[in-house]
View (cartoon, rainbow, N blue to C red):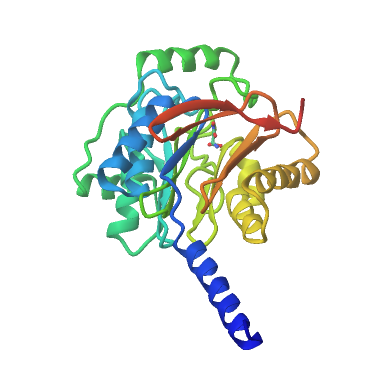
Amino acid sequence: MRRRTFLQSTTLLGLAATNQQKNFVPEPVIIATWKNEKGTKAGWDKIMQTGKALDGVEAGAWVPEADPNETTVGYGGYPDRDGHVTLDACIMDHLGNAGSVTFLEGIMHPISVARAVMEKTPHVMLSGAGALQFALEQGFKKENLLTEKSKKAWEEWKKVAKYEPKVNIERHDTIGLLALGKAGEIAGACSTSGMAFKMHGRVGDSPIIGGAVYCDDEVGGACATGLGEFVMKTLGSFLIVEFMRQGKSPQQACEDAIMRIVKRYKYQEFQVGYLAINKKGEYGAYAIQKGFNFTITKHGVTQVIESASYMS
Ligand code: SD4
C-alpha cells in the first residue's frame, strides 16, 4: 500500500471509531439511593414504556412518596419539630432543565410538582405557600400526610426533644434516583421529607440542583443522601459531575466528593452517601459511614448493593 493510501485508510478507521463512540447507546438503567427495589422497578417499567429517563426517575420517586411506612419521604414522613410534614424535591433532565419545590406541605407527590415547575413555569424553584398554591392550580390534591405512626414518633421525640442527626437510622432514607433512558439520555430526581423533627422552615439539599442532584448529558449524573447541610456546603452532585468531566470514573468521583467533606469538616459522625452514573452506564457509590446501600435495575433485574465507605 502506498504511504498516502495507508494514511487515508487509517484516518478513515479513526473516524469510524470516533463515530462508533458517538453513536454508542448504553442499555437503560436506573439506580436509587438505599433499598428501593419497588421504586427502581417502577422506574424501569416506566422507561420500558415511554423510553424516557425523566419519566423513570419520576415514577421511581412515586413509590416511597406514597408509602406510609417510609418515614423519610412524602406520605408518612416524619414531621418537623412543630408537627408539620414539609417536603423537598427536585428533578433534572438531559437538556439541563430543572425544577424543584421546597418546604411544601400537603402534597403526596412533590416530585411531580417539581417536574411541573420545570415544565410549566419560567422558574426553577418554588417554595412553601407559593409551591402549594402552584400545585393546587395544577390540579394536585391537598392531603394530610401525617400518619398516626409518624405522629406518635414525633410525640415520643417531643418528650426529650433532642436534635441529633443519627447515622443510617430510619431518619435517613431520602430517595435520589439517576437513570439512562432508551436514547441513553440522563435524568435525575430526589424526594424527601428531610431530617426528622428538623426546625420548622429548614430546607435541606434535596431540592438544590447541584446539591442532591445534577445531570449533564455530556458527562452523566450524580445524586446524594444523608445530612443535607454538608451536601449543600460542598455542592456534592455538581462536584461529582465535574470530576467525571475531568475523566474520573463514577466511583472515583464519588470518593473524591466524600473526601472533600471529610477533609473540610472535621466532624464525621454524620452520614452522606453519593451515587453517580456516566454516559456509558458505569456507576459508582461511596459514603462517609458504613451502612449506605443502593438499588439498581438493569435488564429488568433489580439488585441491592452495599456501598463502600470512608469509615470502616
Ligand atoms: C436532608 N438529605 O433533608 C436529606 C435527608 C436524607 O436520607 O438524605 N435522608 O438533609
